[in-house]
Image 1 (tube, helix red, strand yellow):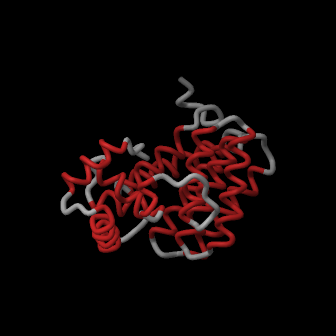
Image 2 (tube, one colour):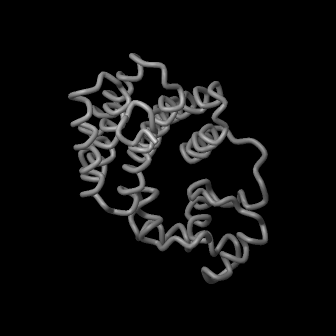
Image 3 (cartoon, one colour):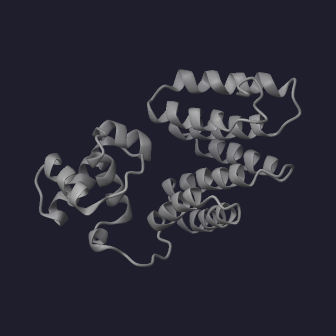
Length: 214
């Protein structure tokens, strides 16, 4: 399956994202160490890109914004040396999401638009969709809003995750928010939708056919 050849599978970065979303920082660090070890014996760029992205995410979680920026830039620089369009789109998406979370909306929109364009050119519609969703949260243009669009993009994300069974703590980890911010979002969601419980939220999601981002 190529598990010993990181030039081929795309799983290490996704494993890093999953471990960090679950709060398993030790496992994320273990994968980064393994990627570092492979770069000493293989010339491929992908392990270095995945490790740099993982380090950027860890730095952000530790509140080290300057270090996170350095690692994201390092990952993007490596992409200039190799043709990996889907991975490039994923790196741009990760960086754009970071810029949005850190309050750099204009730069986030530019980066996320680039991620969407690269993904679309590579016929990766699913990935372009993720970039488009992030762009909406960052304040980019939107088309064809549905009835539930009285929710903001971030409120819709929180509501969809909650309706899918995620706890407030899980939502906070996945969206890089505090638990109190998630609770505030849900309070506004309940008020806007005229509901009072998670059970009613689940029913509304099922009735309206919300797509789960999970």
